[in-house]
Length: 309
Image 1 (cartoon, helix red, strand yellow):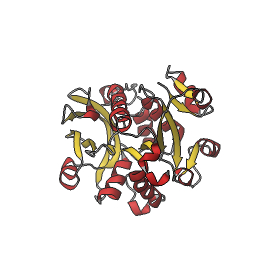
Image 2: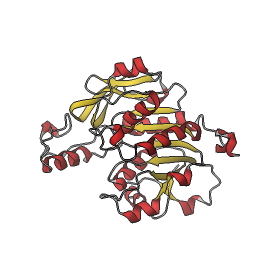
Image 3: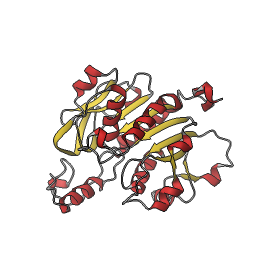
Image 4: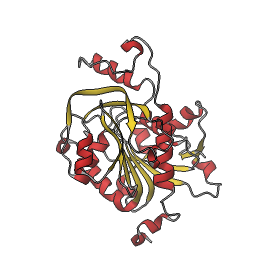
């Protein structure tokens, strides 16, 4: 089934060019199907690019999804037109009384910024606390994992001495876990972060179940046993060229970045990289939607919080 988005969203034409089935709101309105309501809190600067990446993964499900984009940073964006934000994004006040089947919180380039110095730290705290009562299952990605671990579990910020950038092999720890169902015993996923996620901290200081890890990256995938929240520390949504774009951007800015590991052919930045993580990225999001959202969400979302009836 398709994802359901506003007719004019740029992702509609972008994804259709890739033969992705996208249903606009006008067409979806004639179908008698209760779609899953998925809220995406997009914290990345290049919001249109990030929309395309996540919608591509979400579209690989047999479920119909009604997508709502959320912003919590009211400052003027340098990377996304104000018209786009005004037309396609809602503010938290617009949806705070609603319930959602799923919430995705994206990463953000804030790895070297202290939590208290993040301009929208109070707002992201509010959203994550709100989600406990208003969202069936929340999926946090990259920096959002670090933020959520601090807000929900009191874990201090962990920072690497150098940026972790590249494509790394991971191992699944529970072959019959629902979130990794269908995964190979080992799989590849890209990372681009300063945040550190030692597996020992997840095991010793949370009640979360660690599902996949790597010697190079630490914990990669972990989740609560009640399926209400899941965490992925890498970027399975990245396009083939995203790490390259980040590398060349940082090099042009004089930051002397290291070449992303296991990414460019023969570690040569003049050669075109290939995506080697798409299958597991698609499977991860399909599993989350099916087992963590669809299988446990109520048909009538008002039943999630009876006070809203």
